[in-house]
Length: 114
Image (cartoon, rainbow, N blue to C red):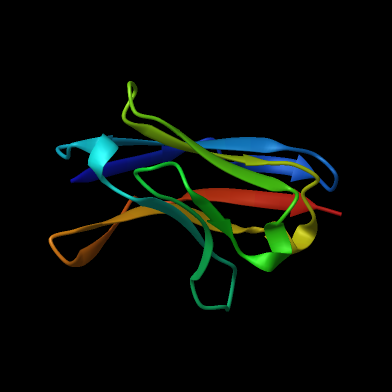
């Protein structure tokens, strides 16, 4: 599997970004997808998930601000991030599990200035 994330950048607090992740070499519609993030000096954490049946979950700090969605026709998963705050600054990774192993994209950096 190949996962290619994009859409990161520098944004002011209160702003928004949309991250995209395109997948290849898998039957995308069959896989649950997830976004993780890793802030400087911290461990990587789960942000949001979306199943193959479009069920979603979110970590508490992003509930009501972030939305994960997918487009199976485009083999892509997205993370719409609204009302960003400096605590959202991190490298964001899309991820899925293939044959029992978690696979990662290369990450995209999101920086939120105060």
